[in-house]
Amino acid sequence: MSDIKVNNIQSLSGTNGPEISGTVEMNSTGAMSLPRGDTAYRGGRGRGVFCGAYNAPSAAGRTTIDYVQISTLGNAVDFGDISKVENGLNSASGSSTRALIWGGYDGASPNASSNTIDYITISSTGNTFRFGGYDNNGVAAYGNGSLSDNIRSVAFGGGSNSDPSTVMQYVSIASLGNSSDFGDVLYRRTYAAGLASPTRGLFAGGFKSPSPGGGTKFIEYITIQSLGNSQDFGSLINDGFGTDSALSSSTRGVMAQQTANTNAGVTNFIEYVTIPSLGDSIDFGDLSVSRGAPGGTSNSIRGVFVGGRTQQTPAISTSNVIDYITIATLGNATDFGNLTASIQGLAGCSDSHGGLG
Image 1 (tube, rainbow, N blue to C red):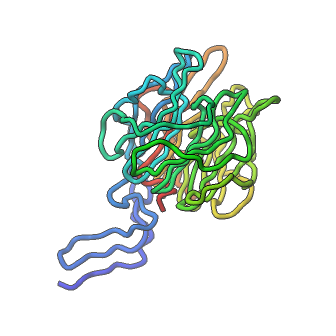
Image 2: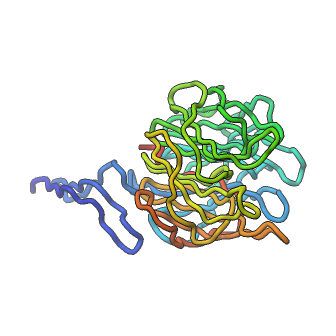
Image 3: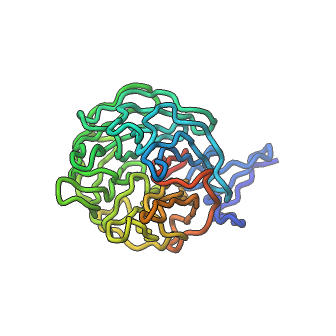
């Protein structure tokens, strides 16, 4: 039997939306091979993990790690636990095999932060392992953001709102060890969101300091494989801050950060940028439920936003909602499922995010 090629298939759609794009090939044994391109099934991958956050009404971290299969609607499943005590207000980024968890905060002990990096193997389940040390230039290592391509993970900012870090640190994801200096950020701030294409990383929003404090509209960028300081990219539509409230395909970055322009930062607003082109963000659509500080991650086609704070006063209230969007298509988010618990400020990562190409 000769090889069979079926060309120009753009998508195979089901109840969960488009899942395959590109050319489908069948070899002489009858086995179908999928292209590497923009597909949710590159190498059989497509798992998103969510960790850290902090419980309300206290600021104590949450040890549980949740995961979902991004291509399949449904509720999150328990993955394992963050092993270190400082398990909240961290960030996550990684490669097609490994997720790194940068820094963290122990809300039960004021100003207790972790200058360490932990990791998990995304395709398995279980607790985190120590990766190395995180040198945040003497500043507390929480409230930072991070981003990655398939080789390098870069963390930036963080620390207390009154004294945020100016430094960026990086590691080679495949090799355990301590972080090294990458360069300096253009704007000092905490809780900025990170996202990436295969070559470029963006930092968006954040809580600015020194006084007057509050959310920022700053977006800056780096070339991930070139050490150096960040540069100006453009501005958000609204002031926003939320460490992991962003996700991306290989060309588009999408953000659903909390905003300083509404009570307690609760909003349903989603905006996006085209990563290869400098410029300001554009309206994308709305979340299904207004909330602040959701987590976010994606495969190359679909993005998911998870959890968040739905109310600050008179008492903090949080959400377990998971929403999804099709990154290439503007519009409102749709219900995906639920987290294992209602929580805010989750750090998200996947084995097929936009930074992997």
